Length: 170
Length: 436
Ligand SMILES: [Zn+2]
Ligand SMILES: [Zn+2]
Image (cartoon, rainbow over all chains, first blue to last red; front, side):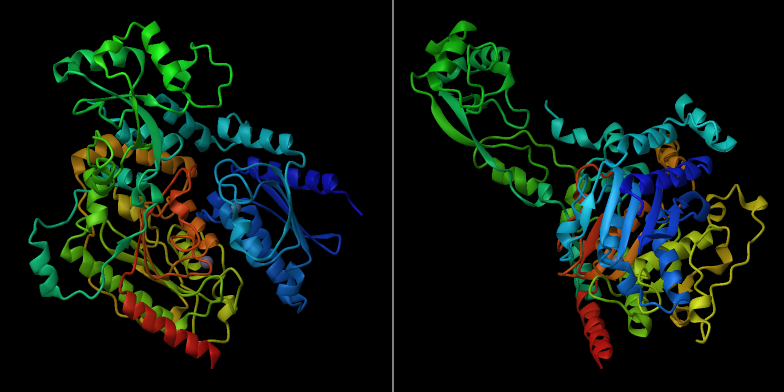
């Protein structure tokens, strides 16, 4: 049985993938019966859809997983543990509460949109009590975010870097 | 003249941490010039058009509640002619409160009872408590304030703690002490309803009727979220997407979530395969064909809609059968203004990358859940109109006012009660259909 820290290491790898793809570096795992049934990262730029956060991508994945196996997704989600490198935003925290997942383990706080504690307390809106734990390898997750927002990421696509320069110039 | 209450409307604040009502700021950036026409005979015309509803702005308590009060010391001038001398010397010693005048008749506002930083050079050891009259007098004497100008005994009065944001708050504050206040025309127009003229209200009504129709035709939701949605580009009034909730097909298919993904499709993106999930029904996925983009780059509207010809995109597809009103702009852009201020707006788009739903208006049958409300915020819509509240789960007025939460760096403006009665009737119809 893998530890929370080990799971978080896997999620951090997904976050690095996102960074390479020029997306906000957030990585996420959904764990069911001690197995990773979905990994996800942000795909906002790729899909031109601002809601395509790692968590929502994983939710879609698990929904398909259940359809293929003819499982009741409502039951499956209540046994899912979510490992995510950054505190879920208000939208994702609400989605996870509506699906009644078992736990949410996150890395660093999300000061801009955090929906567990940082900006708005989504758990207060719902009757379901989900076990939530933050600051699991938070520094590493934060480091990736800093890299992204500084725009110093050497793997970022050319156009992104240019845009950043233009912005600084004006 | 103190203008501090306007502070949150500068663009710095907006970009860095978000003002509490930056929707209005966005209006300024977009060069929103108010009503499209210059008709001002509001009341007569309103009666003439016989509207049964009024759009109620959903505002944060900062705009709707009066400021809490706090205690302050007031000195009484022995002679009124010494007033300017007294104001000048007290101002050098103790800063006043920016939103309050220093003087009311012969009363001079000295300072609040609560210990403040400015008094740190007094020898106060226990900082957490309250400034006594003796301590205050000692401080004034040490700083060479002429105490003989004032009556011996200071008064303690209640004054409003926060600056007023609206005319009505200012009027209430002024009952306790004279205030410095400069009404913001944008805020006042939102509160009075004059922000929309009759033509705009007609358009809003027409869009909401489509939403109602869509809900009646297709909406299948749950306790978290239920209803239908419509996205419109206010620049030309074109309906871009219409959706009804379909949580029977996918737990995340709330109306707003679907509409956001349909708009992403219009920009060449999108995630959900709406086709597959409805295979055996008579719907087909919105099939989009790209128009020749190269020649259209110059045209801002077309560049951001690769699939311009295909609007509106609908899910479920049957919603296509709903007749649409003629598209007409919902606001006029002041072109000269846009060049200067618009750049800041473009910049925030670049940060995100795609256009998303930047600047669009969204119509919803019901107040959205936290997921949908935040999804619309991420997507940078600028205005949301809904018909009826979702008491159990809505966060744009019922359980919370999400768009006034401090720290969020984009905000939209929200109105409720649009075609309230019709929405309520549609809602009852859907509920009885669901339970039968
Ligand atoms: Zn999220
Ligand atoms: Zn929703």
